[in-house]
Length: 279
Ligand SMILES: [Zn+2]
Image 1 (cartoon, rainbow, N blue to C red):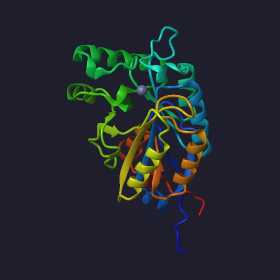
Image 2: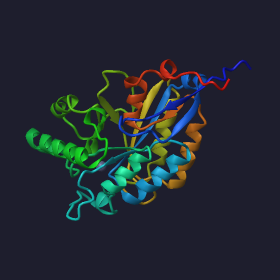
Image 3: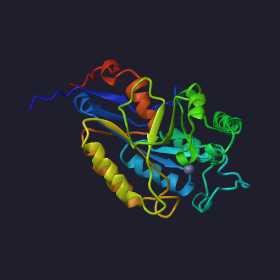
Image 4: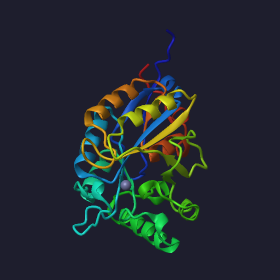
């Protein structure tokens, strides 16, 4: 039919001004205009083995993974708050820098995975500050103004949310799985999760709910692959899921920061991308 063949290189998910985005996807303007559903699988706790495998699986589909890591999780004396986090080695900032360079999103998921609701405000703020300081010192190109702070246990308070609002691009906490389409004032992102057993059916259910809506942004908080972490998914499931989602024209699979960058903070790709000389 009379489909426009105009294609452009769409830069997806770059939240760093200092790094070139390694995955440039050719996406037709027509297809891009039909995207109405964003799916963010938000992988927490920074397990080294799972994070490497998640990154490789996303790369098969030219996608960027959303990895949220504990600032001190890799320290030899790190005292994990439970068996699900303690059970598997965490990555360090050598790995996080490598994965970020490869186009994945690496975001803060607390200083030491404390529940900030269970301590005085000043103590909680000190831990967030220390977390952001570690990221600023150790993750190349990290900019808190473009960062998503992912609360441990998705546990926040209105006071902490207010404090963070001035310091990061957005924060992720507990609440509805489906968020509004990205918009400029969106600072509070909410998510759901499922565990401690395999969470694949919960993800499938949320995706069905999302696709039944005219538009929306699903943020599902997951952890590791196969047996790693709380509420894991199988690597084979993740691969099948991404194959399925990338075949649906209305769906955009994005990390949280990239979704805000692409649909809010950057100009619309249609407006800024020059038409390709290739007819
Ligand atoms: Zn966690």
